[in-house]
Length: 451
Ligand code: GAP
Image 1 (cartoon, rainbow, N blue to C red):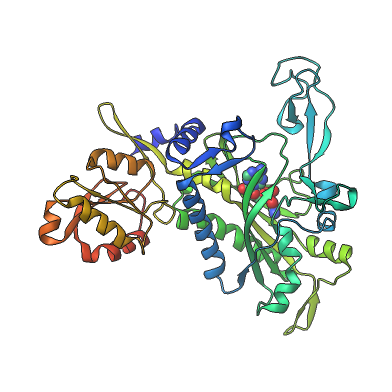
Image 2 (tube, protein in one colour; image 1 turned 90 degrees about the vertical axis):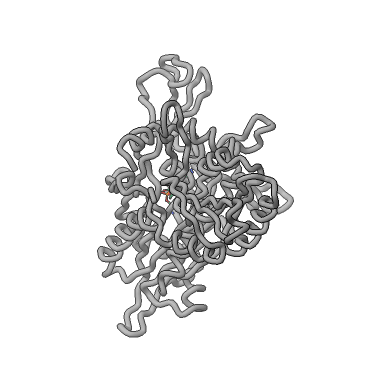
């Protein structure tokens, strides 16, 4: 891509992403007709495809591409003791400050405590910081009493820890091995903000890798590198938009002995996308203590018994959607006053892979296009553009990030060929219908941004 278009791209704002997402059906505000529910968002027809595609690429990378990682889908509702053992009841807190005048709530570590209230501007109205637990609570069963208290999980990881022994006993895994899981998590964040970046309800893609404690440095390094490489190699994210941030002692979560964030350059600046955490044997040891159930592993070959250490890779799925939208967005200047908005999604992530359109609606071309679109459905997500307005169709498909547009014209009737037009370069070429599926499949496999 040209330097110029890269410079324009640097102007991606959250407002533009929110607007495109709503207009094209990627993301809607939750309960919008009632004025909206803060901290919650709904994924529309294209957003749900994009999110599923991001999840699928991650799942394949973790489970299919590794012979020592297996999957799991644990319940969101877990025994309340899990969260005492995990340390979340005691430690999963943020410092909350309230303004006595406007009742605005802020994270104490995000504002100047001596300054005026960031919302109403009043002086000396900010109260003392107090610890605020981020876990949502609810009740299970018909009677609301303390014994029925239950939490919505704030991370998916604990579902993996409490199933560690089940997985060892029921599958062929041997340390070192991993368990991968994707699912919803909930946090009563003091401030939810930045569109889908920080929300109360979100999705995580987590993998816990169980290792011999002696091998902690080796595996920590392995997963750090492997995860940052993944974003550029598998999702097509520009490497210069990714970096590491190592946690200082005061930043480490209560379970971590070492941690690196993979940060992405979001419209509001560099922010965490994924955490790589060295969790030692903290979680399994605590579950052993609280449940009385031994969580040791016997290495048969070395005749060694130990509680495994864990290296965790913890990525936000919904936050990844924002990353992919940000990285893909471009306003490309084509000529005097002519700007096209294009989403450069990696074709593996694009909600629609192929749009099929007739050059005009008449003379049987629409029917031919319909037939072709149907024949591609088994291989790709497709969309028919029936209007015969090619220019407009291309622009619409560019804006939703469709990598291939296939046009049926009069020549198609004679020689069974169509034109394929590439989203990034806008180049076109003619190709036989009989070769189209294989051609697109190969093109997706070898995709490089800008092609
Ligand atoms: N199990 C470890 C853990 O949960 P974390 O750093 O608290 O670690 C991991 O969260 C990832 O989950 C983050 O990097 C982020 O992508 C995502 N995440 C966390 N809180 C979020 C929120 N409120 N909204 C959206 N995504 C969130």
